[in-house]
Image (tube, rainbow, N blue to C red):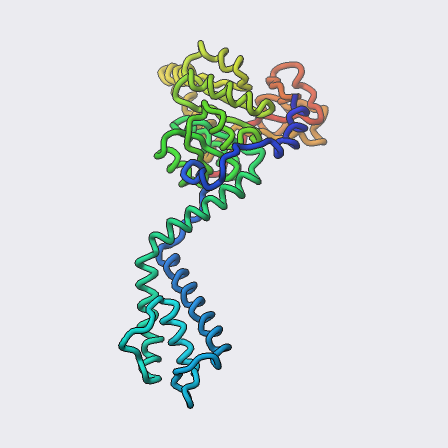
Length: 359
């Protein structure tokens, strides 16, 4: 099964995504980007505007013999005349009844009036330009992301369980751009985008929404919805679109666990029973609950980790290793450390062990 999935992942990049045009997906798919200071954005626009003016001056100066009415000898165009002509032309000021006629007046118009006019235009049109530029940039980023995304993790639902799942993955050094969050709640998606995650707004029960999230190319799908019936439907849809992806789902009631298994989930976590057991243990042995919480907190104390067996460890017992080993994963199956099959490690095995996490 593991080898089959590994082979399938090589061809996952050719699986088609949704056929919707990229510009239509702006507002549905959100690609995170680094925030920039508004003053820096305005400064860049001013610099670009001045660069355009300088280019206009260069064009006029190179062809200055074709102009007349300048302030030089015999009406020739001087460099100041070129600056003046370029600025009044590019700023759409035009020519009025009152025009500067001396070199000094034209110099003042070029160095003082025109920069103020440019600044005014930047501030006046800045919002509209920003919106248009943002939409174009977002459409381009969506197009680029759709062409490159593969072997990522799709998280359906960004409630309490979904946020905790994402936090665990980020703590395990999974890159934020390798996680795609799907939810119908715009506020939840905004929170996910603030963490640098790609987001898709829509119901994951629909195949077109899951295709937008790239589920056909995903290596794993986490189903963390708030209702069990939705989790079953999402799992069915995801398994149909991604037959080789690993699907992990959560349900509130244990009676629905077999439904998720039949729908194609590889692992199912029963949230209500797990919380109930912890509550029961807290009344008897609260220190055990504290240790469990420590193990489940990825960024401090102890944590459960997995690693490949080294060549020097093949043939030995996991009980003799420096780490506290809990089990051995062999060909996709978990073998507990106290079972006889785990006594001799094999090449290709993976160890589940407890590691110390530096705070």
